[in-house]
Image (cartoon, rainbow, N blue to C red):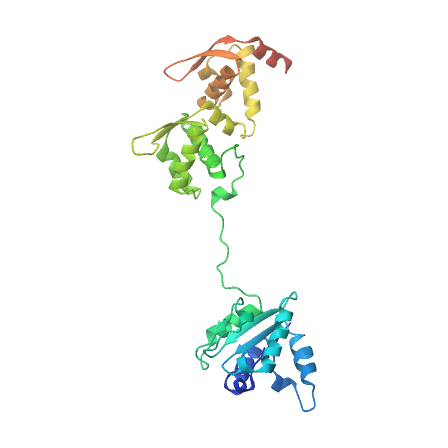
Length: 314
């Protein structure tokens, strides 16, 4: 479908610009309507120009020149075009070819200025693009990995904070140690498209929310941090099968009297740091009392009746 465009102009501009311009529009698939091509002797000016030309046009190009700004007919056509502009699907494209003052009614409309009437290919490309709805803007690329990650964002934090916490917890599992070097976590955050500034801000927010315990240095910066039980629990509860692992730890403590985290981790074939975390959460809930060794092992020295009932009721 060829879009129809009415070209409004002064007769003095017809031969010096309009006919050549309209011809090039037609060569590019635009059905340019110009009175010389459409009107014959005896035709009604009003019917042809306003009813057939402007009324049926998808766009109206108004050629603004030192001649047209003084023409009554051009002003009448311009007024009709302004009415047409408010209808869906229509547009008004002012084209300025002289150092002419732009009419007040067009001041808020983006126009195209042609300085050289013998060479206006770039302007023509932009006008044709506008008629066909084409915009010269780069295609959308793929969002950074952190934007596509499916993650639960804790209250008071943003998406990047939550992802940095997840990266840290995952690294803690891999290293079997929740005391981490910030540089190691930063490296993985960069792979997710997170900037160093956003990473540093995320550590500050996680520390403020007691999800990590940061080591601060003079001059700013957090070279090391420890993931707190609360912080690791935010991560662990998103891991598939975590609740089942917790139930297994409870059962081993009660049924098999396995009360040290080293033995439990080996039996369940789970990371030591995960079993230690479950012991810590149990202690925080008052389900057990434990002793921590320098080597990082936990030993249960007291089991509450509540934990016994939890296991027996399941």
